[in-house]
Image 1 (cartoon, rainbow, N blue to C red):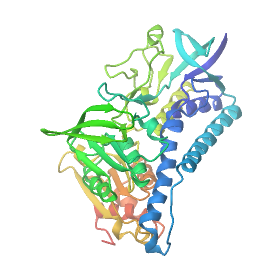
Image 2: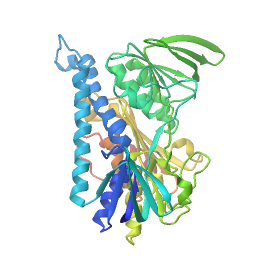
Image 3: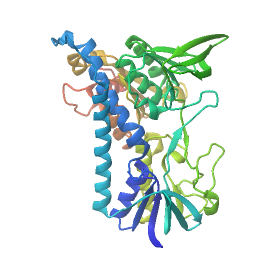
Image 4: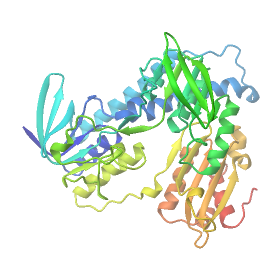
Length: 462
């Protein structure tokens, strides 16, 4: 039986990054994943394939609706979905091979199989009919999450699908119902609407993306409706019955019920921690009432030599959060003193325009304690030059100190723009600091400077 310094269960962004960092710090490291191909949900069923489809579908939509104004005319523009899906799969495969190469380069032992604790110091790993065991001084649980399901909406990944199935339709559905108005639901709604589907999004709350700033929540639905997506708020699906080639759905909106038929239904109401089959009891690891692994501020479980990171512990279910936690754990084991500011983990939704935020939202702050600076992308010269003028940048500052406490962006390139805001806030920047920093012209990020100017004194170009 082989013994390791660190054994990591799960090869997603948290697990594989932790494995590479651990090996770089001199630990004998193993990473176990039942796929055998490392990268996790993010690479194979989430972040990467969805962004490949979002980018490609937007180019198709853009060519259909906006290129004529720029002098580009298409007389016979058409979609080859098979080629689109092949490209998406090739991107995923290439990145997976890259992780395998990094494991080899850093001498990480990659193990294919399903791991479970045999006892507090031993893992049993099953691959097909073969069972092996290993021991380790430290373990990191990085098993991620899976889509939440509902008993009255039976997911079969054919007619009623999770986010996994929505990435691989063999044909563009004529009518698609998306249940859930969060990041995943709206991104997939955008992909298939751009490719030709009639998309309806049903959200039981009174707003889309409930965790985002209120100004994004207010502006985004109108933008998506303008693109052709039907948004139904304060509504829910009370029944879904798969037929031979379609799904009969009962929609409840306030006190009324409506029967409708869709070719496909996507259930995208969130994700839940994945800890099935780990036999955590044998290792004295416990779960909370929501199914997350209980950890302390150092990400240690009740067994001090066992850690947990990423989607299976509380906090935002984001790949970059998992990566930071993986690095934090192994650096701490190496005697370093790493730190994660959980208040400054940016979130990005890759609709068009993109929506991004970091820090406090306006609705989370006490009235009178903050100041807001806002700048519309319509007044940004780069946005104007490329015809992407929807949205705004919003900077929230402490009214007494001018320190930036939140930045929220609804704009083309928002996911890239938010990085400057996160960096500035990490170093305790004030609105004046951002406003006095020279920004290249013409760029999208000048809108962040102008919003900071607005919060501090007054914007120049508004």
